[in-house]
Structure formats: C-alpha cells, structure tokens
Amino acid sequence: MISLEANAKINLSLDVLNKREDGYHNLRMIMQTVQLHDTITIQKIPSGVEIDCVASYVPNNNTNIACKAAAVMIDKYKLDAGVRIKIDKKIPVAAGLAGGSADAAAVIKGINSMFSIGIKQDELMKVGRTIGADVPYCIMGGTALAEGTGERLTVLPVLRGIPILIIKPRIGVSTAWVYKSLKLDKVGSRPDTEALISAIENRDIKFIADNMRNVLESVTIAKYPVIEKIKRALLDKGAVGSMMSGSGPSVFGIFEDEEKAQNAYNKMKKSMNECILTYTA
Ligand code: ATP
Image 1 (cartoon, rainbow, N blue to C red):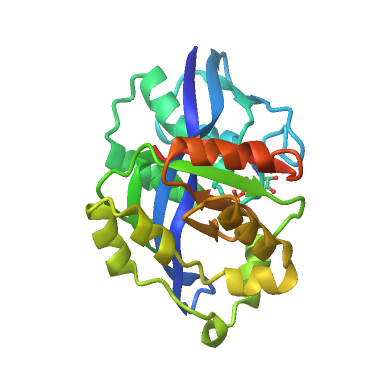
Image 2 (cartoon, protein in one colour):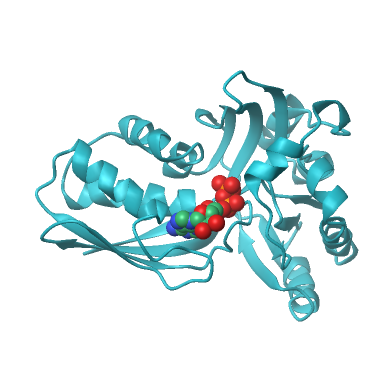
C-alpha cells in the first residue's frame, strides 16, 4: 500500500494566445503548486481498477480520472496486478484548481513506485499527457511556465511558503463553456508573462500580486459577478493581490504574511462557501 499527496495548483497568470485549428487554444500560463491536497492511497489487488471516492460531483466509478490513469499504467507497462484507489478529496471540485489532474498524476507516480517500474519523470509526464493537459504539470509540480495546451513546461524558480487564501463560490463553471465563450479581442488586460517570470526570479511578491492576470476572467466575471466581489473582498481583507484560478470559479488572494492571511481567513470563512488557507509549495 502506498499513500501520496495530490497537490492542487493555482495560476499566477493565464494568457490565451490564439485558437488552433483542432479547436484547442494555445495558452501561456504560470502554474504554482499549493500545499492543499487530496490524499491518494493505492493498494494492489489481483486485477482491475477499483475506486473508493466519496465526494460530491466526483465519479465513484471507472470514469474517475484517477482510474483512467491507473488503467493506462497497467496496460502500458503490462502489470500483473490491479489497484484499488482511495481518494480523500480536499481540493474543491471543478474549481480551476486541477484537482482531477492532481489525482491522476499521483496515481501515475504511485503505480510507478509501487510496481518498481522505474520510469523517469519525463516519461511519466508523457503518459500523463494522454490523460489530460494539466497532468504533466501536476506530475512535475512547483512553479512552472506552461505553454501549448499546457503540456509544454519550463521549470521556474521555486516560490514556496507564500500564504494563499482560496475561495470557491457556490457555482459550477464548465471549462469547455469558458473557452467557447472567450472572445480574444475582448479580454481586457493581458499578463506580462516575462515580467512576472522576472519577479518570480527575484521573489518580488508585491509585483507578482499587482501584475497577475487571467484573461478567462473576461468570460466568467461577465456571467458571475460574484467572482469580482470575492476578488475585492480578499483585497479589502488584506490580500496584496487576488485573481481567479484557471477557468474558475475559485478565486485566491496572495498575502505578505501569515498573520494577515489568518486574519482574512477568520473574517471570511463564515460568509464564504469554501474557504481554504494554504501556502505555495
Ligand atoms: P482544471 O483546473 O484542470 O480545469 P478543475 O479543478 O476545474 O480542473 P476538477 O476538479 O479536476 O476540475 O474536476 C473536473 C470534472 O472532472 C468534475 O466535473 C468531476 O466530476 C470530474 N472528475 C473525474 N475524476 C475526478 C477526480 N479524481 N477529482 C475531481 N474531479 C474528477
């Protein structure tokens, strides 16, 4: 039996460059792992893939992305046993925090180590790519520039220990709908990705906080003004910057120190649906 942490991510920036002929978009985003995680336990069984995941809106059957990842590993590496996967879900679901991709990444890494397959991270990331665009990043973790559909990754200097308050409003946002509704000539201000990368190299948190941009906010905030309200509330409560993560609807605030983050958490936790204090990892 093996137990792994499947960490969530936030976006410190998200830019959409253009739409490709295959319908996907070329993206440029800065991804950041946070300590918030699901716990994945993997156990060997004689054959097949079983799942134990009791969480709202998460399939407790083989359509769970963690099962798909396990099935691909078993098939690709011709493993002589199956697995039972237990997911203790802590990452808000369909929230722009890559919860499913994180679970799939943990399963790929866990099976590699449990069955002593001995595959290097680069190849694991290639397997991950067949499961989902964010899975390779979740296998790698840390701070990274993600390009293409999110699979082309460049490691950036680590940015650990920054307090982050994540708020997930009680709305569901479909990623497919967000990209379909996106009008590239109406995205408002775009991130200066190069300047953000320099700020990450200098650990200039104030600059990062002031200059984070997510072009998908132009779609989600127009339909769900509560996202803008939460961004403002986080700034009112002491965040140095706030932004929506991924295609939303989660919003996060960056804090300069732990005390300010804790105070904001104490003030916001009663009125907000899901409110999680975590740290960059
Ligand atoms: P991303 O940021 O990569 O777009 P997300 O955080 O918005 O991802 P997820 O939490 O990964 O979204 O969930 C997306 C959908 O995938 C949900 O509707 C859920 O039913 C389904 N799903 C399948 N397996 C899982 C899993 N292990 N964890 C969460 N959701 C899962």
